[in-house]
Length: 211
Ligand SMILES: [Zn+2]
Image (tube, rainbow, N blue to C red; front, side):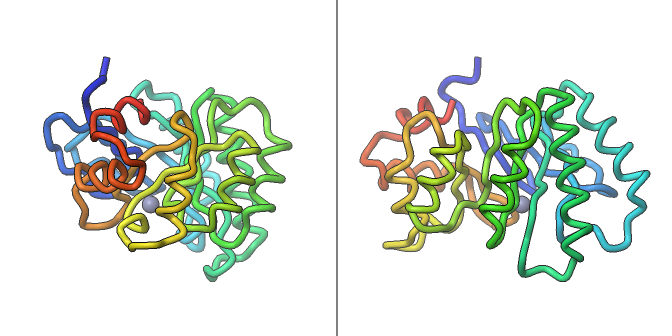
């Protein structure tokens, strides 16, 4: 249905540009900017300090029940943020449960906690897909995540020539990656262009692979 279009898997500032299907990321307390119908909703590890967990949990259940909610997230674990580790674990566990319960994919924020995240996913119920967003690490880590059945989403980091991210994208199988702009001032079309360059393909072929 969306063949020949651009998909922006993860953005905090949708453009509303025609021909681009954008998934706007929302965290507890945020409302949609009104530029795209589709969203993902999650409990981001950076923003857990002053929230009412009961309310946030209920909010997530309600958001995930919407047909316009494409994924749960971003959610995950971050070893360089100030949020208490126990709080991060509880929030991520809740997001995993909501994703499994609603049958929606999970968009993962992960900083220096790959084995912990994989361990939690292994013990989770049925989640249709787990996507590590903003992937920026070595191809070896990418291989580990792909071997575990996960997907990778690439954005700004692939523009750095010779980056680990660019090399990881080059090595990722055609049916296992997404592209995104995240919170960057970037045009998703430029990300596709760069991905096409890295993978030695036409933009149309990248569109087909992502879909
Ligand atoms: Zn993000």
